[in-house]
Length: 186
Image (tube, rainbow, N blue to C red; front, side, top):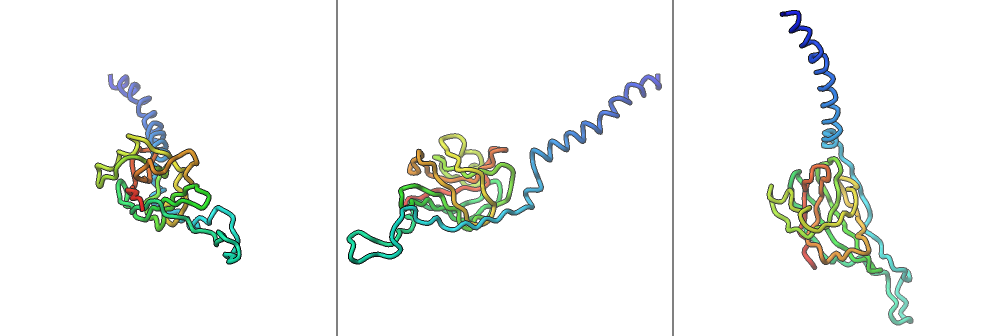
């Protein structure tokens, strides 16, 4: 009887390490825990005016002027959700009428599959705000370029930025907000 029991247990015991290694490999791929300790700093310049203009105003030509700087349409301060997050968000209108979202002094954790989203959801503090941003309308402005620094994200031409009231740093893999800002019109 003991010999039969050992014969039945042996194949199961031999397969257990293979299952453990496969599970650990999947867990490392899915969670990517090393990204929490890797910072990516991006320092992009403020977008330049898009409309061509003379280098200096010409007093003899009516209506000529130096290039206008981007106009701030809305702004907000990032609050923390799943991870400690801080920084300033500005929605800018460029001289040609296009829009850009500027994240300034961003400081958040790195993570897998982070995105920048404009959303119509209200910003809620604490755990109540972690999962609200994919419940309504949102538009992805692309992958987060870096978890630190200042960076710009172009708003697609067919998107009306006035129809969105918040911005989130969204982890698409785990459907959770790292941080968000309520956009207040200026």
